[in-house]
Amino acid sequence: MDRVPILRLGDCLLVTVQVDMHDELAMTLQDDLTNKIVATKARGVLIDISALEMVDSFIGRMLGNIAGMSRILDAQTVVVGMQPAVAITLVELGLSLPGIRTALNVDAGLALLRNVLDRSDESSHVD
Amino acid sequence: MSIEPTTLPVRSGEDVVKVRQAVRTLAMDLGFSLVDQTKVITAASELARNTLTYGGGGECRIERLNQGPKRAGVRLTFEDRGPGITNLDLALTDGYTTGNGLGLGLNGARKLSHEFDIWSQPGVGTRVTITRWK
Image (cartoon, rainbow over all chains, first blue to last red; front, side, top):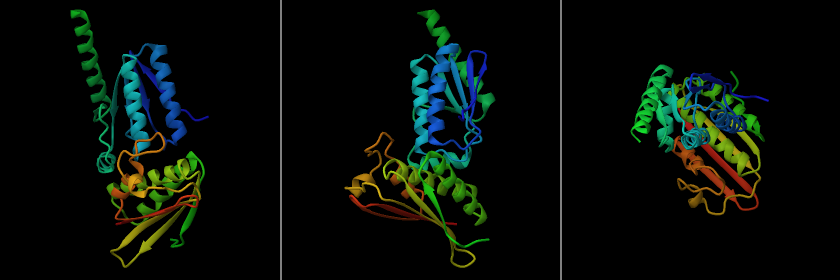
């Protein structure tokens, strides 16, 4: 069965979507990622969608679900690499991915995650 | 270059991917810009999924429109023999869904197209036709 690989990068997980995902594959990724966050105690999730030629409402919902489930499991999600044409189409479709952090590329996404995670560590020290 | 219309089955998630790829091939061939390609592929994906999820499967007809050198377009017709749509106005409202989606598919596909036509009869089926010009 097809699966989208999930790589471990320190305390973060990196997912690079490289195929035109059918819906079942997207659902599998959602499940796999949730399990992996718990198994590896990951604090951050980076999803690289630079190879995706389109994001429709189903994939948009999947990204939102992943961000929501990660948050509940104390991990932060950043979606990176969205192509400009995909962004234009998404907004015209009526989907602006509320609640999802984004960054232009993997480097920027990792920096953003670091920042967010450091901040949340500080605030837990104050407590 | 074939001007024959192609009809593809829409019976599984993989079929939805194949529809997207066929639409992309045609849009590229017609010289659509990247943004226009993306729009028509996304609209096709939404409608193909509707055919599968709500129509119980069906087919997609892909046509190349050539009306002179400056007027090329893609016309897609999705047809199923599913339960049909009782209230079309409601079905075309953003956020309305009878499934577990976001309710953006049908109206989203309309927004991403230049022409949009829907026919549905409860108990008979649904047919959605969209056109996007270059």
